[in-house]
Amino acid sequence: MLLDMRSFWRTLDRGSLRDISLVCLADAIVGASFGAITVSGGLRPWVPITMSVLVFAGGAQFAAAGVVLAGGSPAAAVVAGLVLNARLLPYGFTVADTAGARWWTRLLGAQLITDETVAFTLRQHERQRRRATFWTCGLALFLCWNVAVVLGVLAGAVMRNTGAFGLDAAFPTVLLALVLPSLADRGTRHAALAGAVIAVAATPFLPAGLPVLLALAGLALAGRPTAAVPGPDPALEVR
Amino acid sequence: MPLLAIAALAAGTYAFRLAGPVFRHRMRIPDRLQRLLSVATAVLLTALVATAALTEGHGFAGWARPAGVLAGGVLAVRRAPFPVVVIAAAATTAVLRFSGIP
Image (cartoon, rainbow over the protein chains, first blue to last red):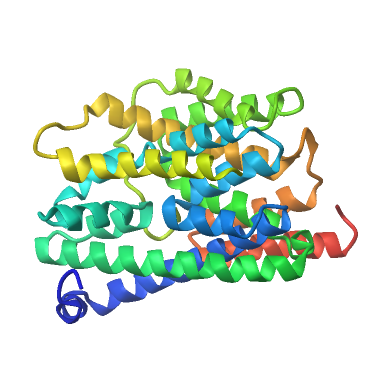
């Protein structure tokens, strides 16, 4: 194993472990709905499963699959997913020291960088605890997320009508909870609302996937920061 | 969704993740770019929320789904635990559909 897991458990306090478990549970619900929605929407079962292991970023997965399910082109799906995941770039620099010095722990650790892992890691100030938190949270989430997606795929193949269970409301709700903390900043909020209006107004006229990208025009309204850019909040975050 | 598209998304995402752990001693992210990326994420996520909640194909999605998202959003603002937020949204939409609201 990467490091001695037992010393990890001793390093982490009970409260952190409880919070990490809660976020794992939340992500499992989201992962299961991702699997169920995509399969009942018509994607082959290997698609959501492969995406979840290789991309491992729920927001981008939902965005890309959503574009394709709405009839958009795969290229638009990839662009939407990549713009969403560009935020992982600064995250990587923030938690770079926790992935270790060896090249293979860095390669492995990089895949575990998500909103939640970074949020939990940043709450710890001591180096040993930061590393323990990063690896525990990252590995636990990777496991929960992918197992949940497989279970969701199996359920979705049986359910057929996920609409009756309201699962289509789960995805926008997850994204809403994810974005809420950053809307506290006034400039960000103006840009985001303008972008949302542009995207909804453009939906009847443009091919699927493009309206969301057009929303980036709202960035012109971002202006200067009115407050420090808030980091991800572990209480509300989901990838 | 073709395998090539999944591979492209996965490779690009991994590159974003790996840059920090590999280059942290050689470069840092300018504050302006960091701010731009963070605002761009918020803009894109909000647009996704709006279109996914309100539209289906090129038209209106019906009232049940946005009502469910709104219920979840209110709970999220009130800092309800995340599983509660998601389940409440799905349940609201499911109940509305069951009572005949599309």
